[in-house]
Each structure stands twice: as C-alpha cells, then as structure tokens.
Picture 1 (cartoon, rainbow, N blue to C red):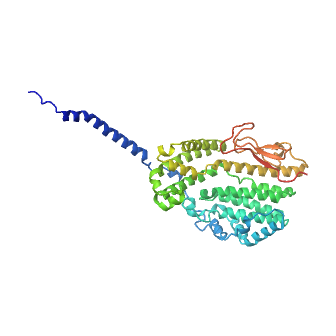
Picture 2 (picture 1 turned 45 degrees about the vertical axis):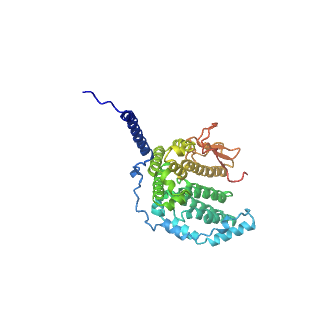
Picture 3 (picture 1 turned 180 degrees about the vertical axis):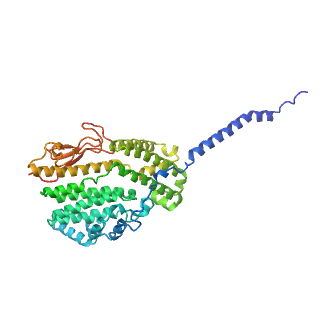
Length: 432
C-alpha cells in the first residue's frame, strides 16, 4: 500500500521542527546561563570568624563609662587657627583646658582600671549603623589630652606633660586590645600618632637621663604585633556582613549608604558573592599575618586589591559582572591600607624609642653615636629592625635623622601603589 504524499504545509512543518528544537535548547541554555550568572551564592562559611567573646567588663565596663562621661567634650576653640607662642594661642589653651576639666579625672580613673576589662560598645563592634559617639576616644586624645600637654609645656611643667603623653600611648594600646575594636581601629592609630607628637614636644628640652629612661621603659612593649590585626580583620568581616545584610533588607539604609535608589540593589548587588570575596581576602591576609611577616602580609594584600581594582575599572565591568556594585561597595568600605598603616606606626614607635636611647647616649657621652650598634646593650637591647622589610633601621648622625626604607630595599626605585617614600624620624631636640 503506497504512502500518502506529504502536503506542502506538512513538509514546511517538518523542516521547521529541527529549528524549533534548536531554538528551545538555545533558550534553555540562555536561561540556565542567566540563572547561574545572576543568582547569589549561599552565605559564606565564616563560623571561624566569629570570636569567642569573653565576659570582659560587661556592657557597663570602664571604657563605656569613660565614653559616656567624656561625651560632653568641649570642641569649639580647638578648630581655630592660632600661631604657636602667641597670646591668642595661650588663651585658647586656657579655655579648652578649663572647659574640659571634667575629662582629666575621668581619664585618670580609666587608666587606673585593668585594660583587659575594656570593651567597645555596639555589640562589641559588630553591629550597624555606628554610634554617633564612636570617635569620642580619638577626640578626647586630640582635643582634651593633647591640649593639656601643650598647656603644661606652656607653663613649664614638661615632666608632667611627658607623663601625660606616655599615658596617652598606654591609652591607645589599651583601646587596641579592647574587644570589638575593629570599628574603631583607625582612631587607635591616630591616638598613638598624637601621643607621639605630644611626647616629643614635652621632652624636647629634657636633660634628665632618669626621666628619659623611665619614658623609654614605659613605651617598650606596647607596639602592635601582626597577631593584633587578626581579630580586627575577623571583626571587619562581621561588620561587612552586617552592612550588606542591612542594605539587603532596609531600603532606607541602602539609599543612605549608597546614594542610589533601592531598585539598583536588585540589579547589581549580590550580597553573598561580595561576602565570599571579602572572606577570601581576609583568610589570605590572616595566613600571611600568622607568619609574623609585615612585608608578606602587605604584598599579599596589595596584589589581591590591585587585581580587584583593575577589574573594577574596566569599561564593561558594570555590564558583565552582576556583582559589580557589590565589589565596588566592598572596595570602598574595606580598610585597604590596614597593614601598611599599622606597620608604619610600628616603625615610628620603634624610632621614637631609639631616639630616646640616642638622647640618653648623647647626655652620657657628650656626642651622638656613630652607629646604632653603639647603643647596645646599655641603652637598647638590640639594634631596632624595620618592621616592613626586616632590615635594621638606618641612622645618619650628620643629618640627625633615623630612616626606615619601608616595603622596598635600599636603592630600589620600585615603590608600591600605596607607598611613595621612606619614613624619616628627625631628632626632636636641638643640636648643641
């Protein structure tokens, strides 16, 4: 029996069938690609980043009480521009010290407590948004304590001023060790910088070897270690998690943080992808810090951030990466120079201690040491080492300056992106 010939319509249908099947397959593949391209990751596995908090001093610990007691800090005259040594400057110091008189007994009371009981507020540094008074400790140091040092120097009480500056150093060190300090870490570095400047001011005419030795002993052993940054880095991840979860569930917070309409979030932000990126960076950085090598940690940090930044700057980045906005927000919120800033502060602290030893040597021998080795062991236990490259800190007696090469070797012209020079520390007393 012969088959019925296919009609032209049926023939066209048969010819279209492979194309229809191919079209369906293409659409399914494109759908799968879009799904995997736009979907967010599962929440990151960061259980090991959640610290085992201690009881500490409780929510009403000495640091919180100090922050509350000093919150009415008087600031007005501090921000004026006055020429040092003028009657106007003396009047400014008088007003600030008088208006902030309540700060100094509160500071003495805090420093008399055990710093292991100090604990920052705001859920130990992991909640968001920040407290309005989160910078009160830095302001107390810059406005009240530094002004009091200058006031004492102006009235000839330099030794009292020096001891207050030393207490500021211990204050910064205690804040660095306090639980929940990741939100406040930048102000710890600033407090130590202010304390160093005020100590130099107080000691510039000091000629007592005993006082200089006492100050040197007080400052020894309170510099940051690489291990000190690890809790800060871990708590920073908890902060990032809080920030991105807040943006994901609070439209008003998203608009306030990003200055963009909340609908932008649905298109360009995948919170968990960003948090996985943050976790990867922090795990690698912690592994470097655990080796105790500032240079290795900085090099690893720079390489990772440079790679992210280079991709972020590409013209089509926003069109080809569904998490481009998240990466951008992460890059803005991340403390990119954490290792560099801390290692720089460590070097400056070592140079300050070395300068005290040089001053003691000069008072004892009526001349400056030719090399830093001359200070060992009477004035220093060992020649200080540059934290950034493990080389000895350099000393130029002709120029009266200490020098640290930073994250580059002597004579090298290769300078890292965030580093553009050596650290110099001139002697702070006048040449005879």
